[in-house]
Image (cartoon, rainbow, N blue to C red):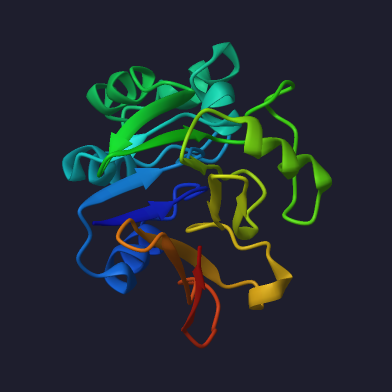
Length: 205
């Protein structure tokens, strides 16, 4: 089965649609948080995720926007309150069984403090071998990652809305995880506001 993975969309509906296009046919969509952008809201992004039946968690930007500091931004008549309530119902982390594999998804760190940024090169990821899951999906850094630690595969798709990874020339990105061979394919594609060549790369776990 093929799982599409996106994260850090940050209100970029064009970025989300681009991810869906380059990933092709998928059996499920995982979104690892930060669908919104601090004090900005996107009816289009949240509605698309909801209608796709995506597995969605909250990140640090949702924490701000859905908290007391975001009250003014969400009071705009342009903001659909049914979508706000739907997003509020989503958890900050989740465990999902997908094709017989246990997936744990959290926005940033699976360890406290949860808002910490852990980049792909950091030694802390060795601790993922101790996690009781087959696959860990994270976001937050906007940096692509697909590495195995013990029996745990760690995947960060990069960002589908706000590119920050110099390694792919600051392109948007997403990932597809194929459970048949545990391969992870990254897709880099243009941000609607920038010009990049699309390409893909694959890691086989």
